Image (cartoon, rainbow, N blue to C red; front, side):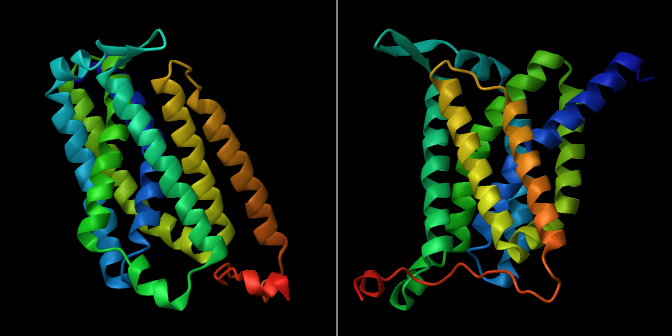
Length: 248
């Protein structure tokens, strides 16, 4: 029999896993968008499955995870643990990756460089795995703080993953269809990167602020999309920037 406390813990953990997985879905959707159409769905599902596998693997390495909180070295009186180093590296990577993606969406790419911009399936999966490790750390440490029952944690992770798999395609199509939503998604990832860096430096930024900011911006943009005439095509932000045009 499953008691009320176990059911409450499972429900809470599943909800938390879904919320914490939003940034992961957005990151995976944007990365997979650089692949050929026929590989995008495969990359998204593979990425989410790897995220689930990584979280479950970490659950069986609780001792190792707890060891990551022990200081390794100190810089300017600030001790750094393994967890903080991983969060810092992940935050910097998110900042760099999101900024690069925004640049490419707004400035476009010269025709001679288009082939270089197309990512390979393996390269995308490797980047997804690296960020999964960062996102999994926060997710698992949060789960451990709520319950010590590994079975409940695993069930919550599996349920949340399949929930995200169901909606990942719809989310990806929506982001790809509306350029402004894609920029908002990238801005959200920049905020997540800043939050990860803040956590690494001991300056915790409550995730509620980030999620509220994104939800508010999303709501405003949804109103804009509704107001815009249906016959009006969205602006395509793919025209290469050319210094010569300014000079002329």
